[in-house]
Length: 97
Image (cartoon, rainbow, N blue to C red):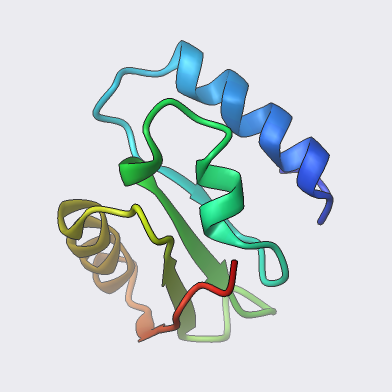
């Protein structure tokens, strides 16, 4: 995890896209940075999504799911299923680049 700083997030996601398998979904917990902007730093923007957990995470059931403009339906569906399997309730929000 890194702080809410676009340069730091871009650097991290750029590195992650180089060292993880191509099919790996890269999720961020950001609530204030555009998912589309973070995804643009990677070589697979279709696999980048926002998964914003509400605090305190163990108590709060809500997870905000934010697909970027390039996020694939498969990435979205997989992320929604993951949240469900974690016992969370999801709310989908639109990205604001």
